Image (cartoon, rainbow, N blue to C red; front, side):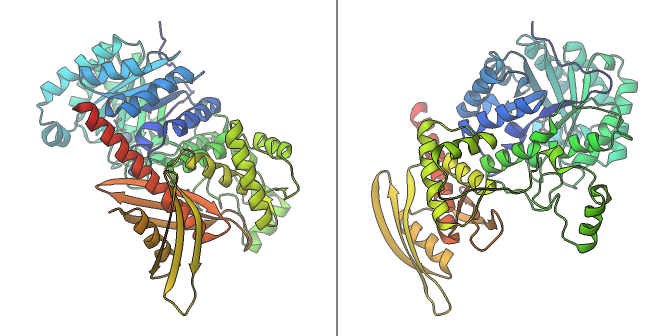
Length: 520
Ligand code: KIV
Ligand code: ZN
């Protein structure tokens, strides 16, 4: 039978919910192949539990959880379910092929949520806790129960529900700070209270799940383990609903770096953190802020003269972690226009990137084009180029050509040729600046109502010939999609990023249409 995750006293179970709570955040949706790649890296990195999705939410979610369940080798694969038989059975079906599987079922327990969201009496919620955990246990021995909005739940009621969930067979009890309202001392005390008052508390592992609305998610998670929790739920880059979830890389490195005051251990291979961060940022098209702890571009950069001087004398003067502890390599000059296919393939291998034959050929062609335009091709350039390759594979619309007239004289004009389902279409437009003109020309070819919510440009490496990486977020009918592209020409990467986001909108519409047809 499937054995639940257990943890020795000081071992913290790392439960990653990038593919569920993270992917749930507006605009962060990932394709199936992106989800599979993320799951593979999480597994290799030593994550204990991968929450792969919410199987009842859509056929796409079900398929992703089910595929991940079949492929993951070491981690427990978990599916989320509300407290209903349909949800739980769908989650059970989705994870059933996993070597180690978990069902995570939840219901709100705070007075506010019970009254307004669920419109249920506390006694009905209490009954549902028992019924849902009992149902989930029919699928697996590893069942997690969550008290949604747990940090705002009355203590007596929380104790009753936790006791009932454990009695019904829950092996992990998660107390989420769903709205990011708790402060560290309070959250630590909540776990101490539960461990002291719930008679069967020793039969389960307690878990933190913190949102970052007040910027306290990581601090609260660490306080939670000081209070007795032994599982932390977190996401790569802190991706997640609203302000996000506790960032995996931050909790793991805090535990590792401050072992003197946090006497715990995780099973994470920390040199893989940077790779995981880049992969999730690319797959979700959510850029990582420059000064983000652990994985931000500036996290190990020392600009001020005083700091640089100190660093040269002894790195520990200003560095509490070594860059290679988290997988940061100093930028390396890699290849130029004379490098061949074999060297390119070896380079990809070094960077941990695997491509099929066709994708490799395409990537190599683009590398050659880039090497013609750019003097030095760095690892970061190759990573950006390949992530574009993966992001744009199989898309319906492609940018074929772009000419822009810009400058002080105005009006700025753009002429663009797009390949739409195999047909080339050219349009010209003016605009308030070259980017506006380019996007207007695209809109003439592909009319849409989407609003531009984010347009962000950053340089992949240093120098005026660096590739410009552009992130675009579009919103249409309450749905957000993101697109990303890199090119040495900022306007070309802008057009490609915009088209990449539009392709995702198309794909969403196609899926919605397919569902409507299927429902008839
Ligand atoms: O934030 C939350 O309460 C959740 C639950 C579903 C665990 O994500
Ligand atoms: Zn959450």
